[in-house]
Length: 296
Image 1 (cartoon, rainbow, N blue to C red):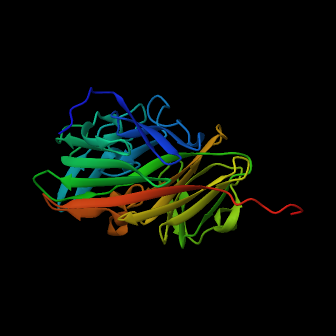
Image 2 (tube, one colour; image 1 turned 90 degrees about the vertical axis):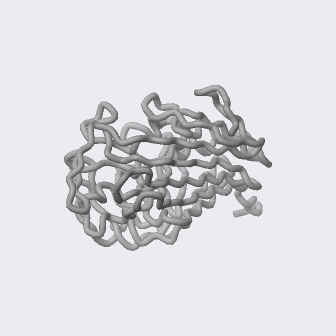
C-alpha cells in the first residue's frame, strides 16, 4: 500500500487532461483540458472541491431517520445544515492505496456511530485514459446487517453564457421546500434536454429518472466539449443550478433518488448484505469542438 502524507494533493496528467486530487474527500480540486478548466472548485465545506464522491448514498434523508427490515435508524447532521447530507466520504480523509502518473486509488473505511448507522469500505479510483477523466466508486457493506446503499459523483462543471447540454430522461421530480423530491411527472419543456439547448436561467435542483447514462456538454466560447457516460449502478441524475452563482452547474450521476429511504422501491437504493459491493463508473471525455467552415 502506498502511504503518502495525509492531506497531500496528487497531480495526474495524461494527454491533454490534467487533474489534481485531494485525499480529503478523494475530491478532484482542479481539472483542465488543454489548460482550460472544465470543472470548477465550488463544492465541499470550503468551496474547493470540483468533484466529490457521494457514499454510502447521496443527498439527504427526510427527518434524519429511516426504517429498514423492521429496524429504525437515526442520523445526526454532518454539516451546518439540519439534515445529514451526501454521506460521509466527502468529509473524511481517504487513504492513498495506489498511484501512477495517470491514476490514483483511495480507500475510506467507516464504522457505525451516532452520526450514521452505516459501516462500510469505499474505494474511489481517479484515472486519466486518453483525454478522459474516469471516476470509479465502490462501496462494501462492512456492517452486521443489510442496509440500503447508494453511490454518486458530484461534479461542478464550468458554466459559460453559451454552455449547452444534451441529456434525455423519462421522468422528472419536482422539489420540496426542504430540497427533497416532491412528486414525479413528465419532464417539463424547459427542462427537456433531449436536443442540445442552452442551460435555463433559473434555479434547478431536480432529480431525473429513465436515463441511459449519456450526456453531452459544449462550451462554444472555450472551443471544447465533453461526452459523459455513467455505467454500473448510476442510472439516475440530479441537475443543480444555484440562483446566486452563474459560473458552474452540477450534473450528478447517481444510483438512486434523494431521500430514497422514504420512497417506493427505496428510490433505487440497493440493499447490500454484509460483504456485498455496489459500484459505478463515470467517464468524462474531452475534445475540441469541430471548426466551423467560414461563412457559417
